[in-house]
Length: 207
Length: 250
Image (cartoon, rainbow over all chains, first blue to last red):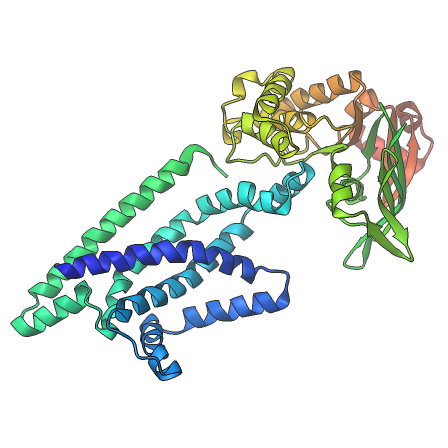
């Protein structure tokens, strides 16, 4: 049962870090500086183009094999959070980018004429509209995240799926895995419900 | 006093010349309308004046302050800080209104003033005043999506007026509106003209332009083909001008 808590922690911490982290990545991706945009583009490309499970394993073993630093078992959880946050930041960055690019050019022009600085235009005019536009895609991604937390079994993090698998093996029964499945399902019903609430909250205006 | 001066303004897009050296001068209190067929460069001229497009050649100044001048075949714009000051002298009303959809009508009119440094109370007072002038007092709490096109355009005019610009540009302000709603926007512009607001209006509403303008400019293929009082333009012998006007009348 403690596995549930770990699963929920991975989920919440990943959102906490990756949702804000996606923004600078998407801005870097759209940067006028070729170099910055290429670096951000490569980051997104690698994060989306390789398995998350592989990324988790690499980040877990990197301190030891890369730098000869031995890690404590606490690092297991930290590695999972780092890998998930970096990976999801890449996906969120792309979602933000599509959202930002879908805001009509006229909004920038009006803001410029009305004396908004570039920063003011982005923070006050573009970002709120972007956020509303990307909510449905964010919901999708967040639901995927709930299920993806199970990938952290790759480095034997004591989250729910890992535990369920162990119990299933020791009891030679599918029931623990079924229970885990039910948990993910209910968790996602909750996530979808919350996302719908947020979308509804932004229904007061149309774009 | 000369409020706007664009001299020998040139602009090309992808090698295609849109503006072939246009000189436009507008004095305080003057209403100038720019007419001409689609693709003649009217909107591009306006956008160059508002600095939404950078010119390829020519100079631009507002109330004597230089915003851009040509140096060695290149257009050099004034510094960021200078341009910020210069932008305060003019406002622009867009064809598609470009209201901020996530703000209420009141906030749409208030926030630009606060950006310009006014306190919240001052900005709110001024915003309510402008909305009242345009008959929109009861819409202050609405969102743009709840308004008709005509109402949205009036809000955008209120938003521009609240910043007290010396000159107001209109880029086809009624082209996105159906004929029924066009009237209410034209009435607002007519009222502003009666108050001697300096305005430069790109429009296809010929009769309106004739009635409201001190001067009309007929553009074609990126150059000024004819310029004069409405009577001079409408009474012109120029065959091209006559056929353009005739087609609109017919």
